[in-house]
Image: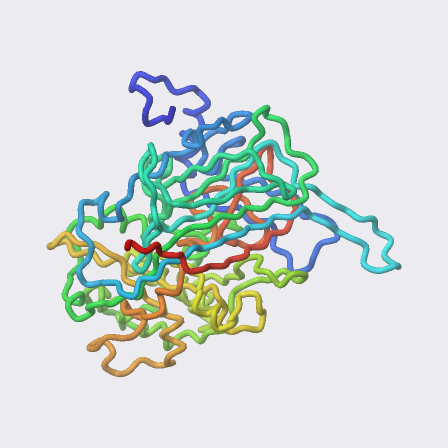
Length: 498
């Protein structure tokens, strides 16, 4: 039985009360990172068990039993029934953003985790083959699901517990199906939506007899997810008249103001906030002592995007590849203050800085990482290290909330595409629509994947570089391993109604 279904007289066990106290002290738990190393070590790096949650706890801090049960919802609050993000806040969708040219896609994701191996390199190498298996008692794999964005919707299905994504897939261990349960999570145990209104798919892996998984060489997660993606059209002229809310932002917007790993703080340094001097100086230069909120939200968002476009030069692709397979292993990110001070960064770095700037002036904003099917069709492959425009791309979405008329929505801003089109904005760009600011004719071929580089508000583990996924392992994460992620997509066949 899920905790929300228990009678009020239910008495919480002491271990749950203890975990709740610990959670209150460190609710902003974020992904733990392995020690970053540019060269392959001759000895495996030491295990770094996350320290921002209780020992023997699940990804959200709730204590885990010696072996998971068949009730994944016992871990966190289950996913709510989301017709869309406006339903929970009783708001109508914004009339200023519309969609067209909707395309149905089936996204295919594969996350491959392999054991650490250190083999002799040549006949003069006297080292013995070293293999450290991925042994564990139970594990939970986590991957984000973006139910809705400004340009997309995941296809849903009705279940006994409400609507859930039509996600199908499985986890395989040593290329054999593993005993597993799949659950979807939309809120943390504090009852708040997950950051940026992300959902999570969670695969709970455990043997029914609670026995351990031993000599594990390979851990493979594969799933398919049907998504509808559309081009967006933005009525910028009318939207520019919307003023700042006099009251609070809606809940769906407030969670897009929360500090985020790799944007506001460093998860590899005990969540230490990034210094903001360079960003504050940049804002001061742009506004010359004036209050940014004298501009209305849409105008302010465009002003910041235009100035940032001219201040930062794209450099690098921000991805890391496996040397043997050329598959992507994760994102190589620099922090937004560094991008601001150097004026250089990858497309991901530029987008991170834009999101950070929006939040800094009080505009709720979120990152979107997407798989560009259109780029894949053009041969611009993510697996080509020399490709300047790979299949993974990022853009920002800022909140458009019309308090007076009770409407709500997200507006896409693709600063990277804007910069590729021109290195300077026209003198009167605030007075006329700009391509990729709200209006975006490529998003019908871009499938949104995540609002975060690693699962947010969790203490999940990944290897060296964030790569969208994470896992929580009992009794402790394997000390070393390798990770790769493969993405693909195909048009979903639409059945004729005739």
